[in-house]
Image (cartoon, rainbow, N blue to C red; front, side, top):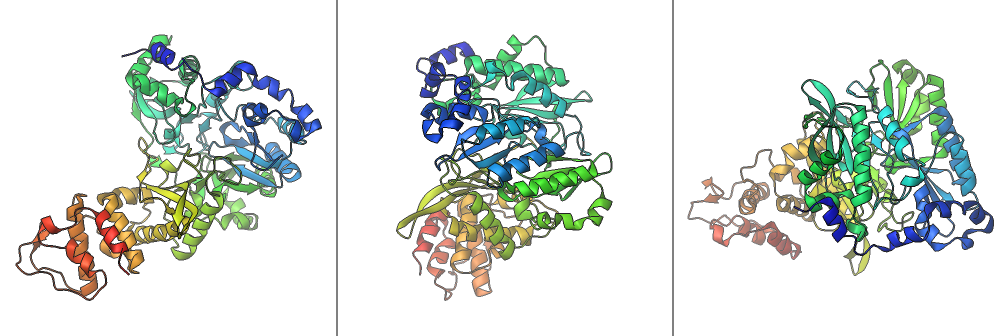
Amino acid sequence: MKSLAEVSQERSKKINKIEELKKRRTPAEAFAQLETYAKNGYGSMLPDDLDFLLKSFGIYDRPQPNSFMIRVRVPNGKLTYQMALKVGEIANLYGAGQIDVTTRMQFQIRNLRIETVPTVLKELESVGLSPFQTGVDNIRNIVSDPLNSFAVDSVIETDSIVERMNNIFVKKDEWITVLPRKFNVGINGSFSNRSNIWGHDVAFVLAQKDGNFGFNLYLGGKVGESAKATNIFLTNSDEVVYIFELILNIFKEFGFRDNRNKNRLFYLIDSIGITKFEEEIRSQSKINFLTSGKSMIDFENLNNDLVQLKNKKYAKLIVVPAGIFSGNGLIELAEITKNIDGELRFSYDQNIYIVGVDKLFLENNKNLFVNFDKFSNPYYKNMIACAGSKDCPFGVIPNKPDAINMANYLSEKVPLSDDSTIRFHWSGCPKGCGIHGFGDIGFEGTRVKSGGSTVDGVYLSIGGKMNGEGREGHRFMKAMPITEAKLYISDLMRIYKSKKLNYETFSKFEERFLSKYSNGALEFILKFSRKFNEIPEKFLHEKPQSGKIEQFEIFAIGVEIYKNLSGVLPYLDIKNFTSKSNFSAKEIKHVFYPVLAKMIERDINHRYEAFSEIIVDMEKLS
């Protein structure tokens, strides 16, 4: 097995254009020009600064000329009254009133002109906020449980650990844009996963060993990959901070600098294997780390309207659909926190918690929350959506408006009870900033052919998990126009609504019910039901005996369809997905019958072998 030095040397024979740029010009040189750029205008800006270097400080040139977005680091997602008030004022004065909450528990202010950017930065600094290192090849905002130390299921306080990690690199010249690629870190000291913990390059996961709580170390998470377990247990905060810096230095020294599409930490680990990478960590460490304990993250974040805290008060959830908020809204929340001596916390799912509310205050001040509580339903609560084509050069579809339109449509067509939980994650392109892979249902933006033209579409995935050790979902149905996706998702929600148990999340429902069927079977049921105006849940059962073998599923589902269309079974002696009878099923008058007959053919050798064949033949029917 090759060493890190050997694989790094092999991948360093030719560096990419960004690495060449870093050698020509430093981020500090670009930042020093901000005041000059503000004075001389957008046209005076150097392309290298616009396209890359200023992103080192969270300053992003957007598709519209002289329209900038600033992304601001918010340690632990925490905003004090003074911070929230100032951010709201900045957004209103300079940014057309819009604030975006992001999946890294921070915020973005859009619609800024270069003439005002230096002023905005100074205003942010006045309340202790900074956009430094929130873009490109830097350690991004560290994601933690926003309710750590507050919630009753919080075991280890992590705010102070995050602060210590930040002190290593934030605003330190030696760490500004020196990594091969971005570096995402997450830490979760609670039983509930309120930090998307499996999606980070480095993840510190609550664990227990020999009766003591600490953290297991997971590495290599990214879009399309969950972080993988190492055999390392960290007993205290000192060990967490130490190993964080150690891995950071390993990535800085040995990370690949050739192909930017394959130079995240995942690819470095993959080149030698997780076991060998762990050996490299241990060989460079001055600490003899214990072997891993039992990971203790067992619960999904259910986003209840109120979360009970250890001090008997509550965290009040403010749902922010697709993360789109306003300066005025943030000012309103700031004033509430002032009245209750509380604070605001951003969450990874683009919502906001008001921490420190008591029930009496909520009962006596319901009017304060009227405009916020209207979005408190299952379709909005757990919605995540990245920027999309309007504000991101990589976006393929508008995305945020699509996510909101989908939630509006489903709220009207298939309203869910309050004991339902469904996580819709939307990414506007394959880069996956909307972490679509971890959604119950993930939407990945694309363009598709429809009616002779190209329209906005999505790839659908299903089955992403946030509990246990996490899991990315799998692709479900081929790409389709968003207008069609609405129809199929509404039918899927009908199935969930009719078959779910009390308080059963969609994640648990998918595991208990939907996962018992193959992708082909579910796709066929949805398409059949939509084409012939049938009720999809009629054809699905909790415990199918087909074992996800498509030929058996085809027969079983065909029998159900025959029974629903005719009122009787096609055969009286059905056993082991066939019939020993010498009689064929009686023909029924339905346009689908020619296809159905081949689904329930007694001789398995003359039966359809795959649902894809059935779908092709079904789509030919008029």
